Length: 328
Image (cartoon, rainbow, N blue to C red):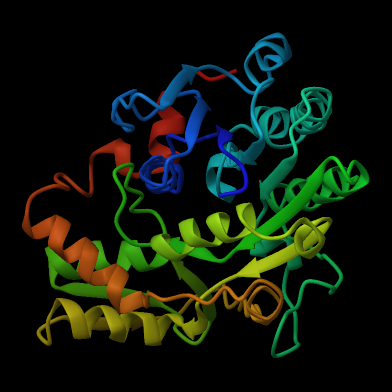
């Protein structure tokens, strides 16, 4: 274990709600800074966990709470395009304007490793069969554009004492305590389980996914890798590039053969296909879980009534929660 004290922004979100307990189990001391808009009970109390309800745009707060940590994992953002576009100025202030001050304060606070959660959407649409980390970024939305801009900012601060790494995740799927049901595999599973029917718009579009357990493992891998392997590096993290039709069939296989798949036309035929060979080659990281595993975990949570009111409760849908908050 290289770094004992870790500061995590957005640690009470979807990925954070899986990552933080895993790190605590491994003996790390964790501080989470989060707006806690999905509740303050997402993370169970723990003697090595400090939870701070706060805003990453509050530099005075950051200067007080970041010093004393070895590494920082930056997960906090207004996530996904619809939530961002609901209030673009808010999205920009959190996802972009707050980023460089956070990096500067991290350097000043002698943070040794800074790991940034970007997005595989920074590539835009590519014709190449495998999209690799060195390809030109052609983002289609402001959400993706600002992710790419923050990558450049972070890279400009890298040094021997400030190790920087960017992760470009595929779409995450599977069960977590702060569950999201607005991501493709999770959406399909929710509809299949409760309605016994899935509507697929288009179907041939490729959508790379990653099981949430593997997403967590990728952060652990970077955290514990030799500095020369990760400093200034960018890594795609994905399972494989499956079409929406293939994802729907995976869901059907797990949920039940009675599931009806209805294909309808779509105006959105964008395909995303990313290669995760680099992180495998350099760090030895390979996903261990499949999309079917993610579906199975969700099925279990539905059957046990851990997840209830899964179409109407805004807890599961970022855009609904954001719409009902008066964040500024």
